[in-house]
Image (tube, helix red, strand yellow):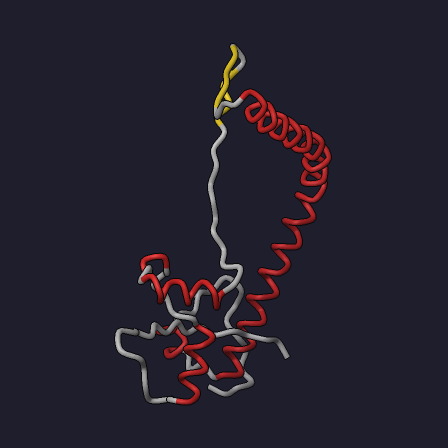
Length: 161
């Protein structure tokens, strides 16, 4: 087959095996990618145009209700604090106040010095900095630190001409 022959008809599903059987070339495969992408874009545009009015109506209806709910949540928090409880109830329902703390490092030098001094390494997470690992690999392309496994995820991205 030559690069100038037509691509498969819409609706065909050329997989890797079919591509080999059809004598695909890079030019034909890219043209097929363009055709499929155009069909997907058209389907998405049609879908978005169809739901846009409903989505706008939904937002118009729910936005003030969400704001009212946020105001009530703030009132619940203030009321619970004022009366000194974490939950309260009535015939209409029950409110339970929960608190979740998220510690963040404000001064890394001070924190890590304290961790080393007090041997509190259990406060640290066991993960590697991707940015620093990439820098390490630039300097040491054939080396991986002990205990580290590199998972590779490959994908193909297409950019139309």
